[in-house]
Length: 447
Image (cartoon, rainbow, N blue to C red; front, top):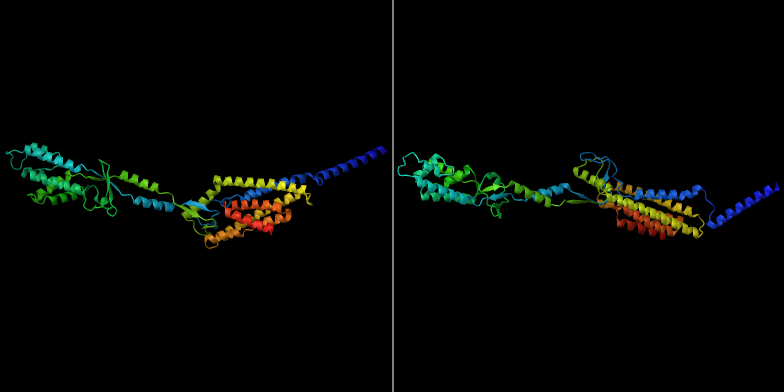
């Protein structure tokens, strides 16, 4: 019995000695399982919360807003955006297309071809003429002499003048003059460009020139016949005969200016393609659409751009960067808390560590809340400059001041740097806001 009591006393003494030695070795009383796990849970919460808070692009996760709908809330640009302006781009491309001159192909050999055919026909007709030609009848050789389209009445009128050289020269000169001024298929379409002119392209050499005098051209058909009849007034033709010969001349003068729709369309497309997309800058805080207003197509495009920027792969890269920053901050705070333990501070290191991280979580949420509040207030202010000024009311230095009181200046300086970088990310990677938050936090720490 005495041996049993002695053994119990020796076991209790050894247990107290081991607890004493453990306390002396760590400088702290022994901790329970929950106390050992708690710092890691607080660290995980800090990383998760600060990553979500400082991650950019979380303001447009609602359903997309379409043109024609009534906005149920004010929509404010969460960051500086560069958005393609479809209307301005289309307007500039239309203007560029309007500057393209229509292309007309010039058949430069038409006059020579007409002259060659007419002179050959007249020569064959003179050879076929005979002294025995009876009035009112023509030899078959005279009819076969003309490859150009000619009616019997016109042929008889020319035969009555014996296909003379003077008549031949007059017809050649009339046709050459009409070709020089130009003969087109559609005169109305041609002269619709009289204010700007056309591009006249030689179909043989490819040489181009700009032509402005469009009023003198004649249209193939009745206009050409009238112009030819005017040039035949000096010849000894009867009225009926002059009309028939003018019709023959007009039928022989094919259009020498033809509209090249394919080439014109190609140049129009090239002009449109050469116009770069017009970009519009939407400053951070600009009200895209107000609650109760109808969403215009342009506003819908801007909202879609803001949503796209939130889903951009580069945005998720910044989210990953925010996660890594928070992780590094957790590790740095842990080493700093261990350093305080080695200095034998009065408080336990895990208490200091948890207090710093809890303060970081709290003021990250406060910063995000003030950021959302500033976004809401900016929608009721006049001008984007006032909207941007509201973000300077966010109390960036409050968290650093609290950490100074809780853990000292060392952790507070590290806290200020981490919070400043997070604020810069939250404001759309703004170095100005990061510097503003850091300077304000330092002033609060040293104050």
